[in-house]
Image 1: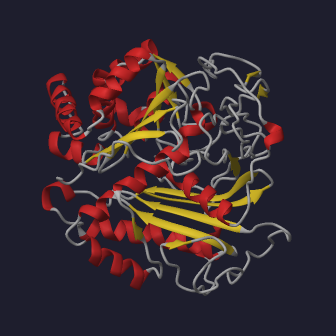
Image 2: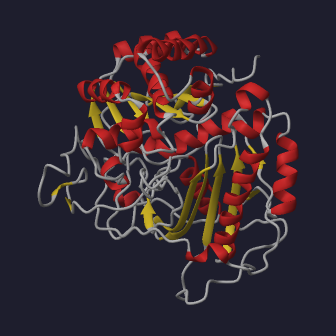
Length: 488
């Protein structure tokens, strides 16, 4: 099978849905991408077919979900979020970390060996860490279990463009590796500042494809002192599903989940058909196209309609890799489905749609967009010139040359499998990792007593045009405060 043709029909589900890829964008216009946040994330039920317990930021907390729960995902914005890299320079000595350590079952017995951060309150933790080094970004989440929830106590995201030039040369260039090494050092220091009970650190498409990927892994090990795990495309698709499937509409039969990355894009068919006992994933495909590779091929600065159309056709050509392509088309024609998007492309669409003065994940994660909203935003963004994209606070300089490539991938998906609704997920791989680590240690057990059903919300009010509080998707009230987040 050719590179990138990792389509599975059927494919297996990772075992549970989780809370989100909570990428932090400090400010799209500021462009630093370095963030620390404190909030709590949804960790939905293990093995359920109708989990829809979404992320709520009330008191920085998200419910872990319940067995068979179908609570609609939403966000209550009373939590606190802050940008802070004060603990990035911790100098404490720490044992070398391997890329994948099962929580509580470390081969080297590392539980409790991290020195705690000075001034940290006693009785907190244990802490778990998830690191994702992608083609475009380096991201970290550190969290602690909190009853049926987990609470994110630290996070970091920086655009490093590790895959810059990879599609032409087949190699990682020195400048890109240097940027990634710098970001990984920050992640290492953040992990050193707490007692880490379990950690998983993954690398994805750029490291899979590069001729010198192994050499880069050796350099990371030697210079940073951590060993990254290069995951295959199946694992990446499963973790994306684990991170986002909680946001499925409880009244839908299924969803088309798509994760538009820098070097690859995953499309996952989630299905609640009652005769399936293997979880929500029915089929998946990983395409060897992402925003970086597509922009490098066609250009990302000056993109006219002809270039944009060529991008779309390139993506549609790759759909031939998906063995379930036609079956999925028949399914969406006969039963209720919706899109479930996790990527900087869809979160950007949502931010522009809401006319946010700066990106705010609490307004974006869990947002529903109707077909007309999607078309209007796609038209608006594709009509922007490069300067306008740079000036837009939800795009900014670091994404201005990539966002149209992402829009082209989404447009190809829309043309191939037309649906009426999109749910936006600002969550993903790292949350899936965290839930797996915590559940391996017996945390986040879903209580059956909390089962309940909620109706989905069809949309949200633009916070710039509404005053006061508005109803959140779970029926509560929601403060229209803003925060500094995301760098997807």
